[in-house]
Length: 246
Length: 70
Image (cartoon, rainbow over all chains, first blue to last red; front, side):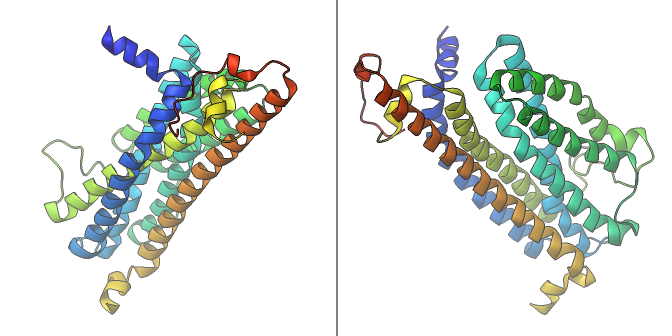
């Protein structure tokens, strides 16, 4: 009962707006520390890879970008489904706020992957299962955002784009398992695999710091963006008058 | 230091990767802050217009002010 009351309170826009505002520094400051520490560890402290030399250091931005692009899509689809089924405006706001973040990290993943693929595989791009499914993920984000902007009515935009987000979620497991289902140039998982991570701690710890830092950064960014989305959706609410001098 | 910048011969792949990553991080922070700032500005302008149009005092419907910054 208490949990439900808390949840109900949180889903009310003025409460959410206030709580999200207070949470931002709690996500943003650890995110900055972890990313700076992780990148320092990855570029300076970690030894060069015995096969890939110093080129492997791209992993410290490539893997967190790949992780976020998938996590953002899953979050977006889940939020869109909740918004569609229970008609919760805040859930649609979360989905809309997540899309541009996810798209930017999908693009970062593709760009850094290309820069890594050139010296290791001898090609900038290959129509390979992992690469192609990741490119489709990027296009799904773009399609979602384009569809939203095609509607003047926010409620219709929320509902139509939610359907696209939910249908597109089938791509997420395809990306993850593509390296096992098809012959791919791309290597398998390094961290999440049977027998534990295939990396010594000096390489692994900076990677985990970057993964955690990027995830916390997403939390901070989405708090800022959802607050914006809430303001757009709350057209005439009385609580808006408390926000500043009118 | 030169060794570090040289990245074992992979400098032209490693440094652009980090450059693009930095650009994406900066864009994300900038665009999120800009989205919120412009939404806040529009919301406040809307409220101001509603208030100037209404004949009744708006405070009837408004919750009590807590004096706390959001």
